[in-house]
Image (tube, rainbow, N blue to C red; front, side, top):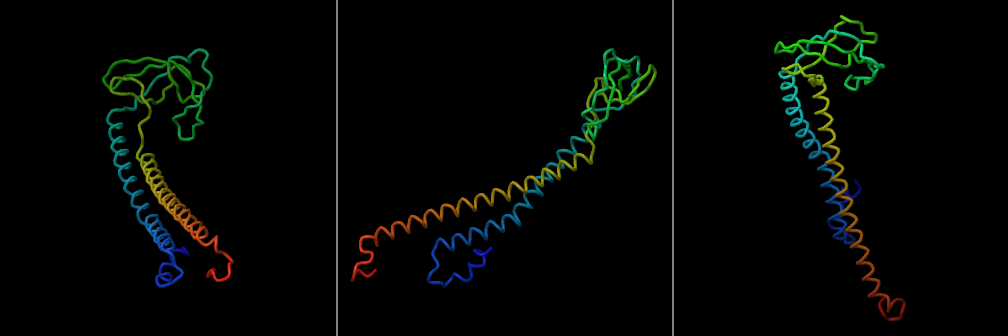
Length: 201
């Protein structure tokens, strides 16, 4: 910020070097990009992600169906398991043999996880299948899709801001190296005559 404020003060300062002005302009440009460009990039990425994810939500709702399965019996050697698809990831489920009717009317039977702690024959629970009765994951809901889109936009904005800052630091690093190189050259030229009477040093 000092460099940005110095742009105005350094315009007619005889001690101002070209690298000082360049550094100030680079800092101002990076600030503008962080404050303006990064939010725009985040907004665009979030909007695109929202469109793609909401389209996926609609497609999954059309292709996936919730049906009711009936417990035939508890699967042998089936301890309680944690269902990774739940919101908390801590809901316990039991492996059972169950039957269900697919959306196309065919009878299906298989071993799957039921959200029942102590299932008995005849108990009912909901599952998700495709049109032919094959088990599929729960469809993505609109709220989760929106959350993912917001996170994608926020991440894109942060990456853009970080890239601007990294670019600014690289440019300033190059300017400082060039400045030191010029100082070394000036000292090399003045070195042999340094301190001599009448040498003008």
